[in-house]
Amino acid sequence: MKLLMIYCTKFSYNPTILTLEEFPEVEKGEEFNDTLVAFIHAEAHDEEDSKGVETKLIKNLKWAAKKNNTLAVVLHSFAHLAETKADPHFTKNIFNKAQERIKNAGYNCFQTPFGYFLDINVHAPGVSQARIFKGF
Image (cartoon, rainbow, N blue to C red):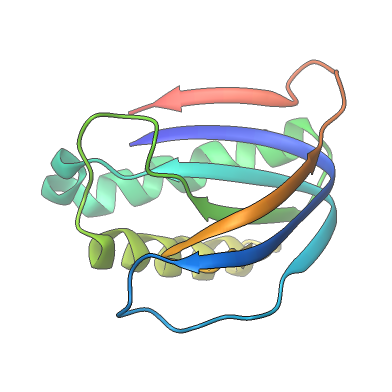
């Protein structure tokens, strides 16, 4: 898994093109303030250890959120950080499990629409720990 985490004072998106027709259609965008946005790329080999990948994802998200003094996390599928891709249903399942576990730990957790190209706006401060990349 590749994970690019960006702390944003403001993050918003609007769905533009549905690329995976088996996922629900979404017409409305959303906006978030003071949130950690996780650009996540699940790789093909992640399917061999879904529980381990899920645990590492959650630990990294909670660590980065604490470093940036936020309890809000947005999960965004960004399949452009590595050469191989996991099955989309595997990735969506990891997102759903991670969202549930993060919420159970006291965080607010949201997902951008899965299977879409999105117009996004990112306003990220130029401070230490606002941009973190992890591969595992």
